[in-house]
Length: 303
Image 1 (cartoon, rainbow, N blue to C red):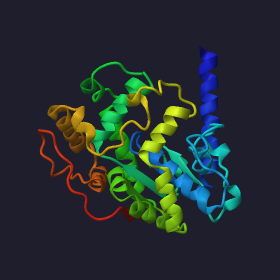
Image 2: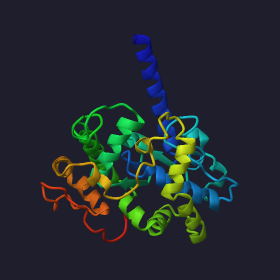
Image 3: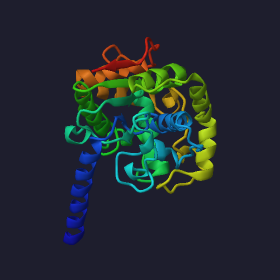
Image 4: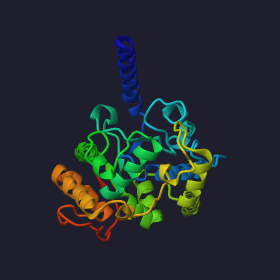
């Protein structure tokens, strides 16, 4: 046991040194808490990047990592499989991560930060833990309060990143805005990255990343590095994709608990992030099934 623990520590130390070094070569990071739409946006951007780079490649749920790799050393999904090195500076190394904020790792690089209605996030995270990972067995009301799965982890993650975003170039993109006006949201993202916007290529990328097509692809191919029952819709990464579907799974009390917990636990900078999803936590009532507010404006860029 002691030897295995020492080996794990050495690997962790080695990996962190590797990522600190690689971070200096990353043009930007795509960051989100799990279940905020990262898989969809990655796949859309990978199609766009492959198209404008002139690559004879139609990304799937495995080769998408060659365009936008995870910020890790995984030989299938991580930095080692990045395939656009010869396209620099035309196309960026956009590393994708769910990691908590760490200035030593993310340095001062620009960040695209994804946000989503916390009630939809918690429902999706619940099904991911129960049906995809099979790491939790219990009702969603219990799940919400478990430290390493539910609201405590979610709130701590957002608090860390909200403070980290304040000191770097960043753009906040909500899942809701991306769903309601995909072309406009991705166009602003590309401009933030100083990447040429080609409307024809963007249209093709949006079409390739349609939810129903990605869901069929996942059912056929799966996600690399994950073993799960792909015949079970509720176990898929492409499970639902709809805005506000939390009302089908949360009681009014559970939905209100999420809003109340976020309102009480998040720092002001983190609470403001949800405005991009059409939710003003400070104005939400503290009981009942709070509905999303109407979205206004575009996505926010900041420095």
